[in-house]
Image (cartoon, rainbow, N blue to C red):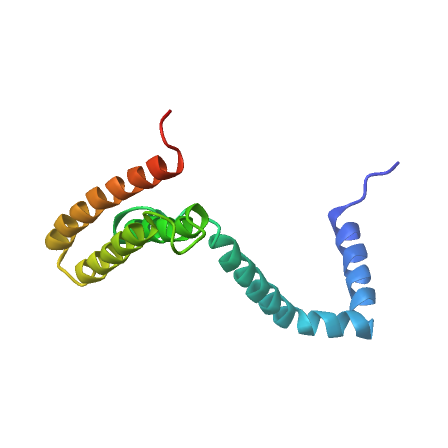
Length: 141
């Protein structure tokens, strides 16, 4: 097999390119390629945003939002642990959750140092409340 020169290869490639570009469908697709790429990029951006919702977000676990998440978790657990409104202890726990929500709402607009001090108090109360809820649901034998 004889080795082809660069000029022969380039001439062949040019002939193939001219033949392909002579096709109207190919020219139409090439003209619309930037639009297709932009649409693809928008679709990927939306997919990335929805996927990023599932990513770990440290601000949702720590600080103000973390405490709010824990309080809401306890509020949801109260309905499971005490299904009846007249269950013993439910009213006290519900009032405690409301006080914690109020404490977090008050501390939210505070400056950082004061908010952190208030959140430490809320965190202590939240720990006591979580422990009390566990003791109420799983009494020691």
